[in-house]
Image (cartoon, rainbow, N blue to C red; front, side):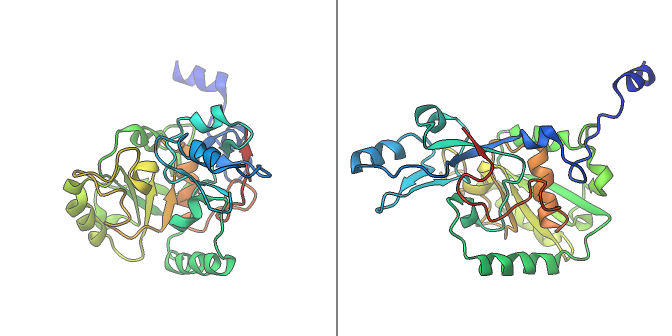
Length: 275
């Protein structure tokens, strides 16, 4: 039966990032500020815009510039539904950034500083090329990111084709994938896992909870993301991020992401956005 199904369906494994994939391009990421938006006309409107986001990810600067922290976006869609003239959905898997500030759109990072940050990570992970082992740690997740990580092992994404494998031991791991809001009870085990990994190593904060703590954080039980527990190299927003986005973040950390396939760190306002 499986042989007949295989003959009927053909190869279902994506060729991304070696080749473009329409489903990767259709991936919906966090909300973003559309290019060419009009500045708020009054303080009252600024307050109204800030109130659209239950996670407090939308702010308005005194000059009237709208800023949206994608690291805090829970993808509820309230801002897009209420003000489609100002907000839209980011499209494509390339939502990860090398710095926490890089998730605030419109991005205002210094290109030289960003290039230096990328160079440092590239130099550190240069040895990680053909065979990369991943360790995943749940630091207080709601479980949604875990489903997306598990999908990397199915025939559609088949992470093994890229030379990436999950390992149960941190002593064999090169990349640490961390999900969850950084629960205080997991702070110690997470640090121990990181310290047990050999050098060179990289850490990816997977999902909005890991990036900034999510909707209700920090609290007595959570530390507001994992950035204060272990050093983070790649910040991946999303609630949850798609398997394509996780793949993109992994390839970004390893400097293996071809240009033009959704891998961009410095994102201008509205780039890759759709209403």
